[in-house]
Image 1 (cartoon, rainbow, N blue to C red):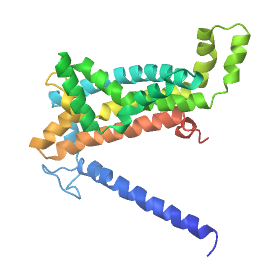
Image 2 (tube, helix red, strand yellow):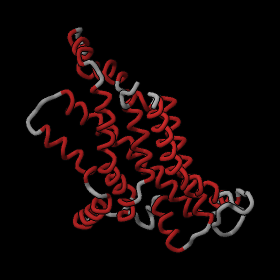
Image 3 (tube, one colour):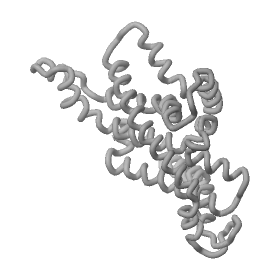
Image 4 (cartoon, rainbow, N blue to C red):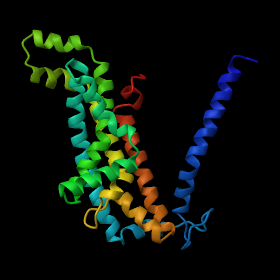
Length: 265
């Protein structure tokens, strides 16, 4: 057996796994182009009528606006919280630091359904309405741990001596953060903004319990539609969500570099 045989076998295995993972998405994309009035594969005829149909469904357009507003607010809020929390957890040692870190990361260990029910019960007990503001709060709980992880990776790779040098030259803590720390951790912050936006935009489980008729996100609207209907229109909506996620990933790779975010290059 030549030394390259294991590598070739691993490459084939990884390729098969990738194809198996991508195949369902590819099927959905192809089904969305069908000219038929029912879902079939392979598609019968090629048409964009189901994408045009999206513009004729005002409830979906309204849900798209809700998702976009909630996701933007969540991305900004989670990144701001994640950046400040990461600075405290990475740069300082204080009593209760480990407990604080565990509290911030706790949502990652909870099933989304459990978290959604818990937040719903809390909102009811506190008398809070189910609107976009409470949706943003719930999404902040879900996405903040990801923001902390991404910014922490950027901070861990930053030489603390650069900040000390700025301080020794007379720069205040704010000026040191603004002109030294912030530019150096910008890749982590940009990654946090994009990742938390995508996670919030696609969130279903938590939003399912907290959405209302006046504040319903697009994934929840799709979920409700599928319960009553199953036609190519739903594949066109799903394809738009998939293509949007791909576009955001490409933008992230072009602007920051995914490998750079995780310290791979």
